[in-house]
Each structure stands twice: as C-alpha cells, then as structure tokens.
Length: 608
Figure 1 (spheres, one colour):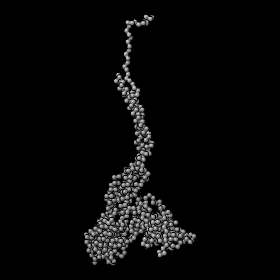
Figure 2 (spheres, one colour):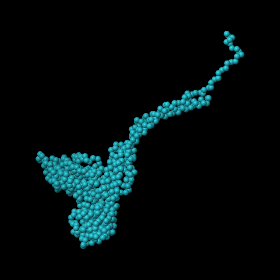
Figure 3 (cartoon, rainbow, N blue to C red):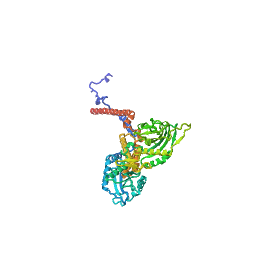
Figure 4 (cartoon, rainbow, N blue to C red):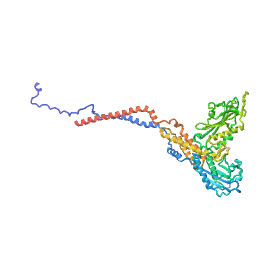
C-alpha cells in the first residue's frame, strides 16, 4: 500500500492553474464603484422649483391695483397753463352822442382818440391794474362811434345807429337812464362793455360819471379835451369793468370764499347774549325770499349756495366794552374786534350740509344784553360805524343790533319773545348783502374814486351787477383752473413716486373728467363765455380734489416696496434660505460622488 501511494521519481510535476489579472488599487475615500443616483438630487430640486414657482403667486396676491392715469395729458395742461395764461376777450365801445342833435355837433378825431385810449389802457395794465390772471387788458377790442343820427363815422359793428337820443334821457334819474340804455341793446346780444359820452350835456355841473348795473356807463359834461375823455374811458374800462371796481387788483386765491367742491353754505345766526333781559326772533323766510334767493340765482355759475339759519341763546362775547358819555353808549374799538367772536359759547358750526370741503360763511346778528346796550363799534378815527358791523375774511360777518329800547323786560315772570320788525330786517339784509360782497372782494359802497372823477355805481336788486358777475366769473375761472392743475400735478407726482399706491378706476375717471372740464373751461374762456367757463372750472377743481383726497389712497400713501419686503421677509426668508442652501449642498455632493465614480472607471480602464 505504501508503494502504491508513493509517487514515482520519474513522474512530471503537476501543472499550476493561471492566476487571474490583478485589480487596480481602490481608495474608498476618492473613488466609488457604483454610479451615484439622481433620486436625492431630483427631490431636492423639485422642492426648490416648487418654491420658486410659488413666488409669482405671492406677488400676484399682494399686487396693488393701479388704474392708468393720463400723466402726459396732466403735464401738457400744467405746461400750457404756465406758458399760456388765460386770455379772456373783452369788447369795449364808446358812443358819442350830442345833447341836442339840432344844435350840437361833435368834433372828435376818432383815430387820435382811439390811440390815446389804447395807450392809457396799456399804461394802467403796466401798473398791475387789470393785468393779472382773469383780466382781459391784453386781449380786447375797442370801437368808437359818433352818432349824429346817421353814424357816418361809426367804427362799431355792434351798435345800431340812432339807438340813443340824449334828449330822450333824464340824466337826473340814473335808474331811468340805466334802463333806457339797456333797452337800446348796446351789447348787440353779446357781452360788450359800453360807455355813452353825452357831449355838451346841459343841466350838469362839471362832469357826471355813472356806471349802471348792466354792462354800460355814461358820462355827461361839456368842454373837455381828447386826453381828458380818453383818461375817463380808460379808467372805466380797466378799473371798473375789467377789475371789478377794486383798486388793489384781482382777488388772490386764498381770499376766495368758495369751497373746494364749489359749494358755499351761508349760515345766518341770531344771537341773544342774555335771554333773561330780552329774547328776539326773526322771520328769516323774508330775508331768504327778498335778498338771498335772487343773489343765489345770479351766483349759480360761480358756486352752489345753500342757506341755513338758527337762533342761539346765552351767547356772550369775549371782549369788554366801555361806557362813553358823549356817545351815550358802550363802545368797542376796532382793535378788540378780533376777539369779539366767542367760539366757546357760540355754537355756530352745526350744519350737517357742510360736510366735506364746502365753505361755511357765518353771518351773525348779535343782540347785546341790557347791561351793555346800546353797544357801538368805534372806528379808528373816533367815529361810530354806520352799519355797526364788521367782517372777518374767509369766516363771515358780524352785526351788532341794538333794540330800540334798551330797557330790560325781565321784571315780569314770563319773558316775552320779540320779533324783529320788517324795517329792522331790511337793514339787516342790506348789511348782510354788503358783507357778502366784501367777502367776494367787491365794494359795498356806491362810489368809486378815480384819478379824474368820482364815479357813481348803481346797485342791483340782485346784489351783484352784471359787470361784477363777469369779473367774478373770470377770476374764479382762473383760480379754479390753476388750483385744479396744481392738484392734478401733485397727484401725478405722488402716484409716480409711490408704485404701491392703490389707484381705483373711480380715481382714473375723476382725473379724466377733471382734465376734460379744465380744457373746456379754457376753450369757453377764450371764446368769451364767462358763465360756462366758470361752471366748467368749478367742476374741474372739484373733481381734481375728489381724486386727490380719495379714501382708497389715503390709507396706503406710504405702502412702499420696502414696507412690503419688511412685512413678508420674516415669513419667507428663513425657509427660502434653507431650501436654497439644501439645493446647493445636494448639487455639490452629487458632483463630488460623480467625480469619484469617474475616477474609479478611469483606473479600471487603465488596469485592463
């Protein structure tokens, strides 16, 4: 057995199998044998993309609605108002008639007189009289007429020859002359300011100049030269018809007693200082019917006016009066008038109709108590005021009314309610009318002192003459257009500077209609339609104010992008940073793992 198992020494050695090829050296830190998966990268970038897609929805949810505004049209209107001031057209005519066509003749050189009148009008305008916005001294026509009966030398196109005969006029009765000239149709259906010059007028000492309540005036006199006539005509045309009879020029914007919405509320108050002495009441309906109704009607194009009245009791004044033996009453000096109104005790602002931006004008009739009756207002020159009243610009007026008998009737247990007499109501109405005219910047008297003569101004039963209404319409139109233009310009700058401001469709419509009304007012003004231009300008100003003070933009006027970022960043910034950093980290990890796999593949290829 041992021999069988033993190997023969001559047998060849057994063959060894071939060794497999050697593998490349593997470093687990820098190489990997499997391809990195995309699942983690896909999930991470899915979260990032979904997060980024949510931002447009977020911006849409916080988007501010902005109606498009005509910024370009607003700039055009603003530049046009500044560069091209209002040029209201005015038409002047002077008509020369002899006092007696049979015995008088008119020796006037019309060409020479016209040059002289134009020169003096230009001279007055250069002094600032009638040259401000709302005037027409830079855009006027002038016509002169010699009416001998046949008007052979007439230069006028609006005057009908033979319409005026001086022999038919009674120049001692101004009212009849005024009505006769109005019936003669001097304006020929348009707004023409006429001055009738009666040459060699008899029955008149010196020169008589009267301005009627329509759009004409007349001069009666004799023995004057060309320069003297031209001086009077230029003064009437510029200082009276154009400038409203005011020496200091047109009313400034801050003196306009009309609200931003074109409304005025006239509040009439009867104040009984101490009802234990006496109690007075009034029939206000008579004042409303006789004075206020005609006045409100003629001022319709300028303002929408409403009226209210009340009677108050226990309304003492702030100031103290002193007894004057010579005058036989208690006096108040003008320096004490600013403290006369007692705002703590006078509850005047009770109107519910004056909401918004309407203007309230207070008119007060103050009935003093028995211990200071009669109460008199003393002027700086020591004289007593004839009206016993005063005004406060942009606020209203106060009239002190003393009862006829200053004896108190409180001896009896039952107090008697007195009613103001019709005569007293008439006086109060006249004072109110004068104060209302003064608040509009017009004269309350009947005289105008010129450089040459003193002119008589006829009063109208409506409170305002036609040429005064023309003056108010022109200057209110000018002020309203400038105010609306300024408001629209401010709104345009505000909206463009705040991109997060809400602009509703209503605001866009108001701005659009305001621009249309302003352009219509300028067009009407250039054509001489004073009333229509005043109405349109009032609408333009009201709409511009409504747009600027719209409630929808007042609460978010400063809701800027920085504010929006500060509100939302605490919620979204931390999450967005984590998502973004996670995506960047996962992308970098994938690139590193892929580089390890590629390195292993490269070494494996080299080894094989």
